[in-house]
Image (cartoon, rainbow, N blue to C red; front, side, top):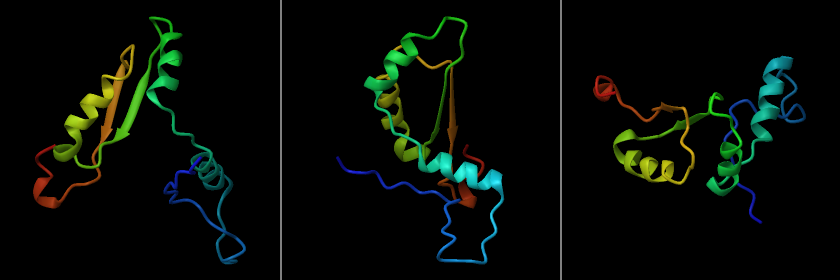
Amino acid sequence: SLKLTRYNPLKYDNQDDNEIDIDDVTARFSQLLQNCTMLSSKAINPILDHLNKNQLSLLFQNIDGNRSNFDTMCVDLERYKPKFSIIALAETNTEPELSNLY
């Protein structure tokens, strides 16, 4: 299987740079990011199915271009059964002239 390369802004290597003095919390967040696993809708759906009606489910996604990726995101959301209680979106692909659009 191919290993997915992921961006970890907190990753550091003490062997390469002895001047980095990272605190324990940042190191723990970095390790958490490194250990994240991508799950398919087939893997997530059984988890969602076992939630009680009173339990909250949340999907957070950096849409990275609302205008260009919104339709794809909507199609992706149809793959999840049942639906998430909350869907939170981050838009990090904006320019100053588009700031009033979102």
